[in-house]
Length: 203
Image 1: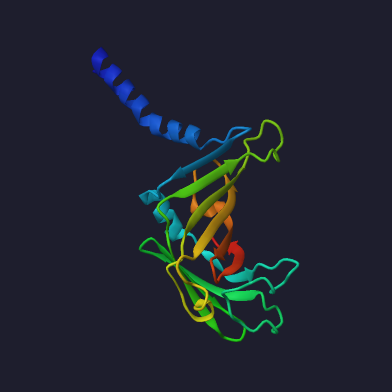
Image 2: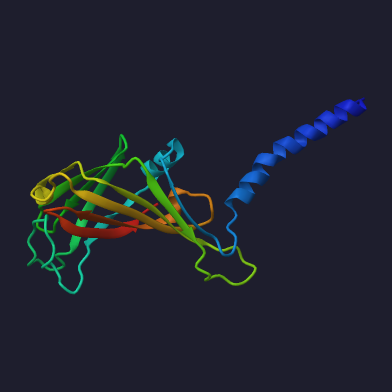
């Protein structure tokens, strides 16, 4: 038969075991009116998540009203139909992204982008949910760093210093998962480079 002290210990243990789940649930809850911007180093959990992120195989070269006229640092045949469409293969290894772009006529180029020392996380309630429903936050992971190398169609434009701005966009609660992020955008700028790509994620 349990003593009174044993029952107290057993009850206390039960409460302690239930805390992690409850705390996690509350930590992940998104409240109406949420707005947060934070800068931090990429911890091991974030690095693992970045490695799990899967890019769609299609990438689009961003163009505005000027078309290709204002671009520099990328060489390809602009006369092709849908010349802004590229095949994409990516890898995230040793804290470095490698973006391999392939044009429709078979030309390729690789951008090597080491992860910067810090990243920025942005989350906001866009107020697009009905009242009394937990909001699905719009969120971004933003990385501003220096391109290490460019080959092929990018070779002439990557000279030191050439910067890149990589953004992952998505929706979710206060806890971040690879599946939250549905789109990406990459901008490369420097003395001889000025272009941007965007696309979808396959998480």
